[in-house]
Every structure is written in C-alpha cells, then in structure tokens.
Length: 435
Image 1 (cartoon, rainbow, N blue to C red):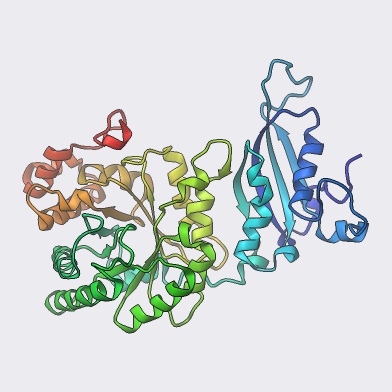
Image 2 (cartoon, one colour):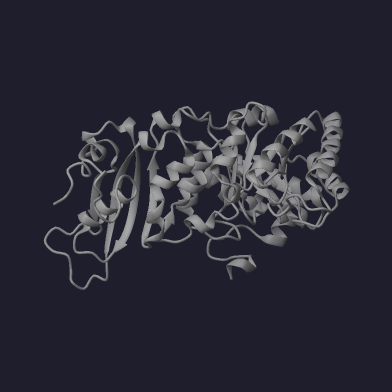
C-alpha cells in the first residue's frame, strides 16, 4: 500500500512550502509508484526499512511528496514486454522547512543519495519565494553592469588572457592595457590561472590595476578585471577582501570546484561590492550525461543566479565544447527570465568564439549577452587591437541586420578574421576538440 503522506496532487499542497524537483528516470521496475515512493522517502524521512521513531506525525510534517508520475510514452493499455526499461518523468516536493535556506542542503535534498543510483536525472527545480528570500542574489546583474561599463544596449565584450598560464604579471598588465584600449569591457583570468608562484594574485592585480587606471585616464572607460580568486574557501574569502582593498573591480570564481555556497558567501557579503563572474570548469561532471546528474539549465543557470553570480561563462553551441543549442539557450533563459527578486544575469556562451560566429550568437541569445573570446582575439592575424575591432564590427553588423560576409567587405579587421576562421556553419567545425 502506498503511503498517503507521500503522494499528493500539486493542488493539494501550499506551493510556497515546497521545493519541487522534476526528474527523468530509466528503470526496470514493475511498480513505478513504489520506486518513486522509495526515492521520495530516501530524500526526506525514510530509509530502506521502517524504523520506530519515524512516526505518522513525522511523515506528515517532513516527508517529501510525489506530485506527479508519468510514463514516456504514456502507455494506457499495457507496457510492452519488449521495452528494455521504463522511461519515467516525475516531480517530488520537498518541505522547505527541512532545508531551512541552505544551498548545500537544497542540493542534498534534491539529489543527494539518489544521485548514485544511476539512470536518474534532475531536469529542473522550482524554488519558492520562501526559500529564495533568504538570498540577495546578484548585486549588479545586467542593468548594473551596463551602467558600470557604459554600454547601454549592445552585447558586452569579454576577453581572457591567453596563453592560459605562464605569463608574468608585467606581461599580463601589458596585455590588459592593450585589450582595454581596444575596447574590451571585461578582461578575465583563465580558469587555470589561480595563484602560482610565478604570477600571484597580488602581483598580477597590481599590474592590471595600474594598466586599468592608465586606460581610464586616456579614454574615460574603466574595464573590469575579473581576477580569479578560486582557492580553498577560507583563503578565497580572505583573498576576495584583500583584492578589493587593493583595487579589484571584479572577481572570478571557479564556482563548480569551490561550490555554490562559497560563491554565495561572496555575493551576500556587503564588503564584496564588485561584480562576480562564474566560470564553468568542472560543471560538465554534473550535467553532461543524458540520463544522470542535473540539467545544464539548473547547474549553469538557476543555481548560479541564486548563488549571486553577475556573469556566467559557459559553452556555446558554436564553439569547441559542443552541446545541444536548446540546452544552452535554456541556460540563458534561466539567467535572464524573471526569478523572484533576483536581478537578470549576463549569459556568456563562449569556448572558441570568433567574429564569424557573432551573428549566430546574437540571433540565438539576443543582445543581453556577453561575447567572450580568447584565441579569437589574441590570434587575429593583425594583432590584438584588430581582433577586438573585428568583434565590434561583427556585433554592429549583427545588430544592424547586415550579414557578416557583407560587413567584412569594407572592414579589413573583420575581413581578416573571416578569412582565417570563416563564418559559423552548423554542419562543419573548425575545432580540433570536436573532430
């Protein structure tokens, strides 16, 4: 017999009192209800056998609720015996009171022990206002960054240092100045550049702040330097404040190695009064399987926004880390669509961006997007300045509805970029990683 405290209709609960996970499961089971009931209890009050202290009152107050269960296809007459397994979509509501505003406990409830059973993927999560109001979220968001950067309508341009590691602080300062003078809005460390002895956070910050101030004096523009402060959490929090004291105007975090709650600790700290950027390294371990883990929209989108990121770098369907276009567009939706009181966040689809892909980028993601490039700027045949200019030319062409190939005819920088890398074509790839 199914437990009356575990099964409910969505209309039968107060939605503000539940965090709801939507799941996909591939299972060989003759009783899908018992299977899903076991998952709901495993993630709330129960274990594999009844225990004396798990009373009816405890089940009523604390057990998760199965709110829907569907076979895909939704067989009505009979389930074919030839089917290798059943494909199930189901939703489970978890009492907000069990979790009490903690991001680590949110993840533990939604996908704790059950993450190891295999054949189970968390597709989405509904986060009620009662939970969300515990967090301020992004301090700046799209509007705040546009105001800070003085870029009211166009996509913003981000560039990362290349090579990823190995340059000295003075070299980084020189490259920063060249990028900023050329018109880059946000200049970021590579995720692989943390705090090595040959290029420490403090030394390279000092050089880049000096370069930033020289550019500001000459142009009136202040580029953001997203310095990578990723570290063990105790050291990272101290490092963040030390960097701000020494002039940092933006911080980058490898969110998926330090954890959402570490990012949130920065975002919720009033003394950390600069924009925060999320880098996606390691995130693929969470979402790349089609039948296990969590969906990319939740990992890269909703949870990064809840945790307070102002900008989120992640793969693009045009780049060197191939993913399904609709998944990546969904990430952008999770970052920009209305979500309680949280500000919209700049999506940064990247990983191999070049000028010939800008038209497809803007067509897919709109203008509230960050055009982020590394090799596509540094390896331009005419140099860094021309590489940045080619991106500006490509953005202007896309916003004016002019095809890239037409715009390139009388713009030598864009023409050179198109000659070297071509124009995005979904049926071919220029990347070694995708071959």
